[in-house]
Length: 551
Image (cartoon, rainbow, N blue to C red):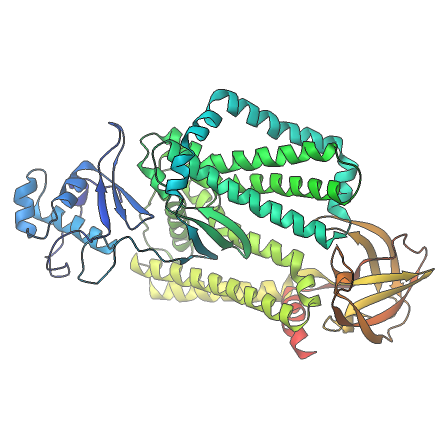
């Protein structure tokens, strides 16, 4: 919310009937003066909501003590304020819940659990301000030039160390590992992401800011840590805010590099494989954090560098306006006066859907192999995706109607979209495969499918690809064909369908089919992909989601 008195006079409100009777700021609202001559005024609501305002609006906010009405405010402020401009700004403050509306809102109390659309849930664990203040001398030493050079050297050194160990890295990513290795890697990764978030808070504290909270979150179905550094917007220089945003990536890059170099000194075995897997995962996490299309470190750094608050939200507003104008017509004011806001906003809208879709593509077969629970989880995620698409379409229609789009065109465009979606589901084809496992006993190889998998795909002569799969990559070890469509029911350990080595694993109900292979694979077990040919996209969704409930 950046405004001045002259900006506020662009609209002419009728009166003050819709404003609170007592014009004063809410108890959880604070006006912060600039910390630097070039810095903006800030209005803070609660612990983590900040609004950048001009000096005129800040003066108005400071004058809201509950003893002045609109006319008294105009007299107090003087030029260039007029009654219309004061009313406009007051309405904006009221819409942002910055005015006292008579509701009992306890100041300083923040919810421990917070939902951030479209698919993030945050759980606050602690308030780190005092702890990080004690660590400020250490942060100052690490942030100096020698510390920064050493951090860069370790980060790059780890990359070269992984390249030198390429065969061992391939084994760590592409072969099953023990449960102990996975548990250790997961724990180490969570510890590194916790340090990543403390890095954000430490640099913010070093520059004089106050990190609000640290906690864990579910970010697009993936667990992660977070540190609320919204107070960074009070820092006077964009360079400082960029440093805060990138501090976490720097910390995690050093950890990844040190682990990669450590792995080179370890003997072959689970410890080395675990170190290599962790180093790769940590580096990939750094790269993902640098993507500016979701609200991660790269986006915060870009927003800080450009000095444009709410960059992503405003770019997506422009993108929605563009789509609405193309589909329904109407006139849509731009939130950002830049040539790249629409493509950037479109990318920001599409990328979360891409992340979810990619995750579902990778993990859907594993979900289905887990039986009814996995099928239910997969159906729930897809239903939420459909809800997001529907919600987005309704938002476009509402914006179009508000900006003058005609009813006839809205109906025609919506109908055309429905026809196009139906055509895509019926006409676009995609490969259909069912993931199972194989078991080799001597020269005899069997295909093993979970009982909830689509048994109808199994027919005599159906092609099957045999693979050795790890957590990330897989290697084809052979091909075969179904020798008989007559299956034998039984049980098999769950780890047969996952890249995990584990004794006494829980068993699943399975169906076993004999395979004919030209040459038996060297590994006694592995994954198997049964080829079902190309099917329409709508049928594919039915087979993956709806059909398992009928089996």
